[in-house]
Length: 153
Length: 160
Image (cartoon, rainbow over all chains, first blue to last red; front, side, top):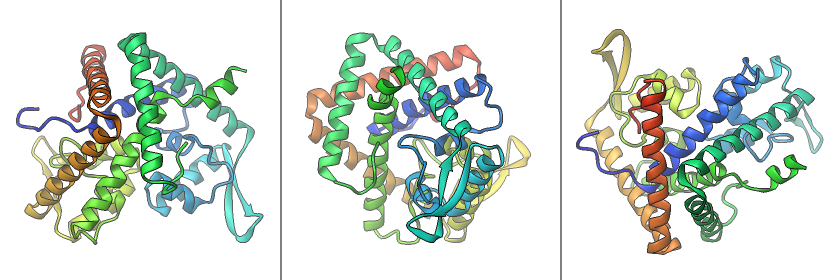
């Protein structure tokens, strides 16, 4: 776009990651999961939401509790999860994936792997490995710079 | 067995998400420190490259992967505080688009300055050579994916 400053590294990371997310979503849809949107798939991003409380999910997804409840209700209505009493706190509830939900989680992982293979093909092996190594260093550097602010996969 | 390997190996996509989430936190912390105490991370998250200005709520929902209702809640909050207004879309009178006010444009400039600062921190973490590798690989991917998208299904993506 004319007149726009070049994207910063954050925007580049986001754009490529969004592409991975879209590819993953399209793959999951094509595998027969027609009743979930990509907002629902975002719920199932690693680490697994199994055992988390809705408020924790809202925190990691950076969305409101109301939105989390809407997404969870849809997933519950379609048999992917249930909300149960939290064993450690009777008033709170935690999310439990059903067998169908776990299967969907596996499908998402497989599709994310396919998207990664596509990226590797675009870059070629040498540059792909370079990218992966730099990203690993970055993840490590971030963890050192700012420990335990949020859970990272 | 394959599942086990896949579970342990972080996907490049997941790593990019980790990197971006860190940038997002840096940007939010910096923007808060600059005095914007009436916005939470979800509001700041609406401000993305290249701009929030001119987008339709439905497109914002798609790119942020949140419901239309959430977008309306977030935009409503920002509208009440004078960062933006929602106007009729000149291209489609039934739709509305976001228009940043002067206050909203200043916020966008502050967000960009924080994104630049976060980038500088990443460059310092990695060193210039490896930072260059990261930037070049991501830029190449952005260009390739954009070209593939344009050729593939003709759908345009103004954020790329």
